[in-house]
Length: 379
Image (spheres, helix red, strand yellow):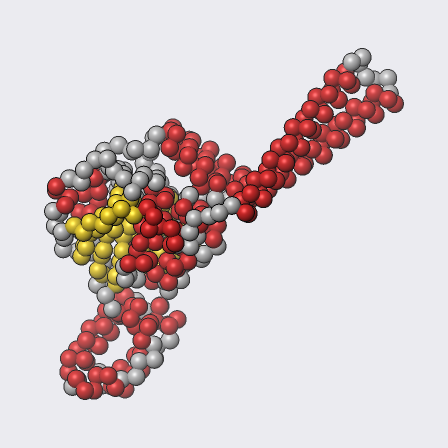
């Protein structure tokens, strides 16, 4: 491979390079490495590199950061890290794991502190000053990664193992296929929970659709390109719900089908109250939209009740069909309903206005207030 051939290689258009099979890219990388070994040191910098950023994106070592929020779930986390360490990537990949300790009350086990890995280059535990909940822990972790770590992309996943770590390769494949310009979400195609949980989850999805006008079939398991991380960490809505916040921001995203698996160890810390709170948090991201939709429905019912009241008065005044006392009771009931609807409409109008004027938390700006310590584990 001479200099002119190398020049032609660097001239490959980005759209053609993205379509190139992975095996060919690996072969080109090896040829480039051997070329640099054969050439004199003084000539290496003379090659024109018009598409250097593109080649750095595909051919250099991929730097992958994995963000895992944890609350006392150390046993499952140990097993999860071992599974991550066994992933075989088609491209040379350097893995850094950031564990966000959401103010756990259980101490970190000795076995986790001294766990050995060959694939994972570094494991760090970022402890928070107080318990925030896993959604806000994710927001803090993303902001910390944005300010302190150099990586190509960030994978967000739960620490219980229900997000299959081997599916990270599928997320990375979608990442490469889209050119790194979309957030990749794992769409839940199969769940491992009980029938009761699945039933209530179905009701939650229907309620979510009715109130927001959108469908939701994803959780935390996702991949964020570093080019979009700077956008994600200034979305105030991810402080309440990560995936809903991304959806609301209109950042480009792609959903791919990924089945859920079972927990690796222990039991879920989420009880009924926690699950309902989590569901309401996802809907609260669309608070102004939900209030507006309810206000519209309220206005529709208001018009219907006015029509009913007019019909009652017409029957009472112009016909002999009314039963004595019937019109009075019906009119009174309709008037009370009208007053309630007016009050409800006023409340939701105030909610909309207050949301527009209330102060918000920007994760990239405010995350430092919640960070306590950073511990680097041996790897």
